[in-house]
Image (spheres, helix red, strand yellow):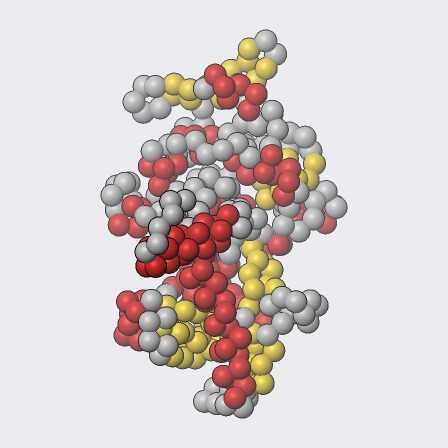
Amino acid sequence: MAKTTNGRERGKQLVELIYEERASQDTPRRPNSLRPSELGAECERFLWYRFRWSDSVETFGGRMLRLFETGQLQEPRMTKELRSVGAEVYDTDPEDSTRQIKISTFDGHSTGYLDGVAGDIPFAQEPWCALEFKTHSEKSFKMLEKDGVEVSKPRHFAQMQIYLREQELKEALYVAVNKNTDHLYCEFIAYNEKYTDRLFEKGERIIHRQDIPQRISNQPTFYTCKMCSAHAVCHELKRPPRTCRTCAYGHAATVPEIELRLARKGEWFCEFHERALDLDDQRSGCADHRFHPHIVTGDSSNGGTEVEEKGQLYINYVFNDGSEWMDKGASFDRED
């Protein structure tokens, strides 16, 4: 690092050093389950890719990581303020006081954490409410004030509906903070049973279906697609890394497999090796990996053609432009 006597320049260098150190502490990892808020996404194909670790892993610099942390630091403050107006707030899991209340659905394939449950909240229509705390940029906060949670933040709305059902509550309190001005926005959200039924039906489809859902648009420049983390695999047919989640032999553990103790909740199951796969297994994969055909082609009608060579089973793919690619497994990737 170049030396300088200029105080402002040295200050900038210190900021960059702090950002770099913060970023070095972060290890981007794929979530092992669908987040409840993600079920509020409009595109089921995106969710299908994400659950199978086929979209790109988001990485963030030190500044953005600090910004995320700022949101987390607001939560105790919001809890304190609710208590100051008479609310009785429970913000830790009864089974583990070091974390928030864990919500697990779809046999462990979707997990999230509730910010709290509170009673005696002024103006609430129910004796107990689920709590959700969020921080917003100026633009996002203005949209929230104008349109409300359901319209401006559909993922947050979906998240709260799932939490309400799992906690058997009828109302949630959404508390938002404008990061620019520190203004607060509060909205009571009523439980919507029909909407939540549809969310759970969607979750079951995403987790257990083997065929790929339709794109929300076939145009790569469609506004929802342009910023999507699955854009490369969806519209460009870029193959993701080989893991058990992208393999044709793997699937989310089903109720029968769990009941027969072939797998635990939230695990995957390999039909080729006939065994359960923990997270380390899923991340590392094996030499017998064969891509799920719809991840390769992006087309539910094109599953490739099986080819046997020297006692080995390969999958040959022919694409719409006439090009071909043969999946020989992980040990042959160097020849791709």
